[in-house]
Image (tube, rainbow, N blue to C red; front, side):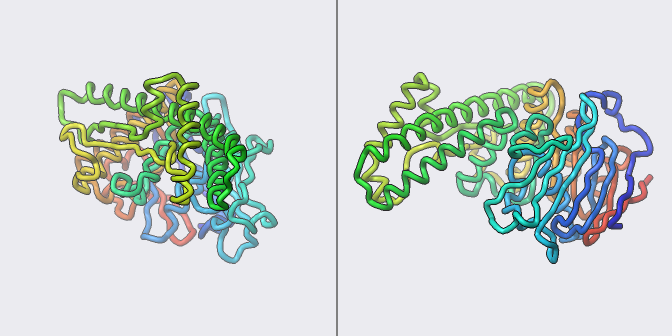
Length: 407
């Protein structure tokens, strides 16, 4: 139905005794979003399983949920493209959250008169108060997601792995986005000077100093994040030592000159060295038509730890298992950093390519984290292990209905 309805668990799940310390979405309302005209969902703290045919709108709903966190959402599309076809170009997502500090109202969207540019920002309100940007959401809500588009993370371009790592860092440091923005803008201006064949060094110096300062800070943040993620993986590896882990542990490495330098020298020396590299490389960069040195050229490399094999050389199934393990380690690290408050998990078509053992292991991880996970799929039987502890919803062309529980 396109109106409001309530899908609430009949009985508490096994981990709900500690619900006072948990974060979850209690209600979410979509207006003119993707293929939804208007829909209001009210859920319990339990996992939410969205079932329906391909193209029914399951991922659209996950995307709406993802916009309650900072950033561009799980698909990273321009905000005007989120508006429902035939609408005035406006859209809205509003939610009521359960938090350890009490209820919280979050709203975000795009006004019809603002939806004329791909670069337009979205409106964000928290408890009715307008915010200067989506970064304010980081103080209240964290999410970790895994989508089929991420299956090529290990074999695709380095930019995708950098984006994955940068998203992880944003969970702990919302100001990291600002540093990346400053670096990218300074580099774009420097590249324009190179393209225009400007030879006046004074016009480069200020931009290169900004790039040196922000680039070094970016490299240091990445190095720290990888170290913390690796420590979390090592801890879990020790806990699972008695039996084979269904999701193999990953070895992590940063491949970048600036990231290596911040581990060896004081930041001020790294900044000066990078500024010199940029100054000395202007002719080379001019010939290439772009800046060739910096954190925008680094790579986040992952290997199958038990096999000592680069992830890009592993089988498709091993890559999927490695990716899930990495995402779960990310969620575990956030939980640790947030005093036990787990992030919300968005897992799109997660069960489609997992065998029974790995599905069971994934559901066990969801229970262990105590998170409200939103999962999508086409086959209800793949989620049989969650029948007694999840809300099952049917999605069909912009209409959503609660499904009766199987016993």
